[in-house]
Length: 479
Image 1 (cartoon, rainbow, N blue to C red):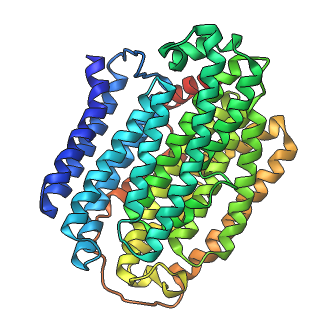
Image 2 (image 1 turned 90 degrees about the horizontal axis):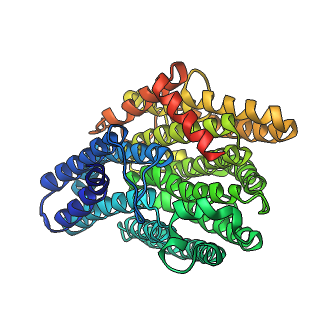
Image 3 (image 1 turned 90 degrees about the vertical axis):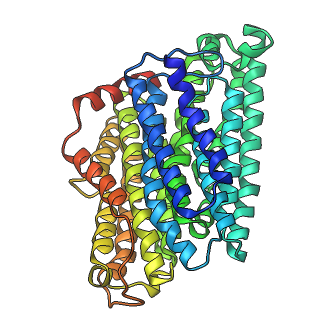
């Protein structure tokens, strides 16, 4: 039965993608997209009830259960948001019926690829899944066919290809390190076999492999200085894809990196992956925080916010230990929920105002109070103010860091404070300045946005014991 559940997580989006590619009409395709995403989410929840059975190709453990449930949940809520968002894009002529079918088919293909990357037990299969997810999002970023959208898609494609090539070389080096110990063939690519025998692998090969893997998958995570594709992809693609990119796809690349970190940690003679991750995380936090002050496009601004928060998450996992790993998991979850909620609000705001330029948007709390206050709540959450969930996760990251490396704490806190100032400075004029642009009400679905924000608020006040226990188990697993 567990194999059936595991297969269903892949089969549902794959079959739905095929159907959505041929079905005509907006109503049918939008509903099927939502139903398919809901079915995948409900199926993923059953993994906590059914004892998973892992094989040479597919794996379910405590670590990827967290990623799978988070991914399928945000995929579902984003599909609900997408329904009302895409309807407006059709009405104003930005999307044609042909592109609509392509959009929905690619959406489910992306869900399939991300789920496959998360459940793959074969490191080669995981690499292929991440590549499929990348190519799918490249196509979706350029769907509007404007000069800017095509330029962003090509930049994403070129930089993403460089990143994935580096990750492939790192994967090959891991296989080469494993071959003398586990022999040739499939076992040299199976993660559960690799982590069992990693202590006997050649540490020199593992060291070089992890550097390539960190650079390769780090490109997908959006870590500075490998981030250049991310702001353009967010700014020019459809807003639902911006929500999926920030809330999910960055996490999938992070997951791949964590798998290799766990394997490297078994070999005591190999390089410690933590300091490398801490360094790249801190660079990303400081760089992205400073860049927030120079943004003129609201979606591009929140893209840099994603770079900052992925830096915090990678920093936490790099520090390691039960508390830091717990904080990293919590921060990743809170960031996915909060940033997708922010993009839900920003997407409808851009449709109402007809622009993404910050200078042309003002007085939202007067002209569009529900969207305006929803965005304001999201910004309060993302900058880490209490009592919302990101405050709790950042507090745990800072606390765990202070007990081990106080001087790193100062750099981290400085980056967080700079980002707080930048976001509040930019968003202040958008929220409370003089009303600008059209004042028509938004024909939006507010349920996804406020559902996410309600979960983030609840997490800042109370974490269910079951969730805490689950995160603690994963934190121990990560070492």
